[in-house]
Image 1 (cartoon, rainbow, N blue to C red):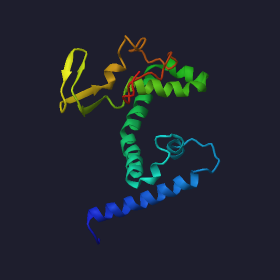
Image 2: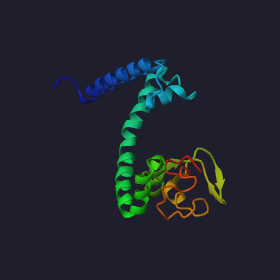
Image 3: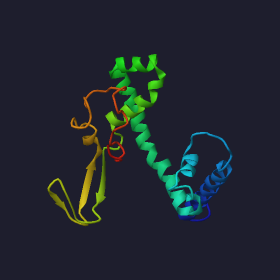
Image 4: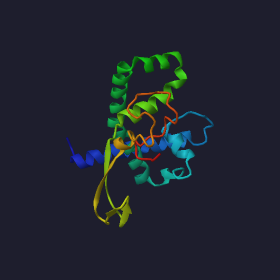
Length: 175
C-alpha cells in the first residue's frame, strides 16, 4: 500500500491515542464507580492529569497492553497447572469464592510471571556489603524474593489463604 510502515504505525497509534483520550474524557466525572484502568489513572494523584501529556498517556497505555500480555498469560497458565496440582487449594476456592483475589495473588507469587528485571545503577551504592557503581548492570531476581523463607512463610507451598498473601515481589514493589 501507500506509505511506509513507520507512517502506518504512526497513523494507527494516533487513532489509538484519540480513542483512549475520548475514553478518558467520557469517564471523567461520569459518576460511575466501575473498576477499570482509565478510572484508576484518573483517581491517582500521580496520574490524574496524564491525559494532558499525550506521549506519556499513550506510552503508559501501550506499556500496560503490551507488557501485560506475557505476564497475564504466564500467570493464567501457571494458575491452571497449580490448581490441578493442588486440588485441596482448588476446593477452598470452590467452597469460598471470596478467596479468588487471594488465589490470584498466590498464583502470581508462586509463578512469578516476571522472574527478573535488568537495570543500570544510576549512582554508586553499597548493598549488603557489595559495592555497585554508577553505570553497572544489575539483575533483580523477583522470583528469589518470593521464595525467601525469612519473609514468606512456607514459601514452597502453594497456599491460597496464606497470611499476607499480597506480600510478594512478583512485580518488584517490595514487601
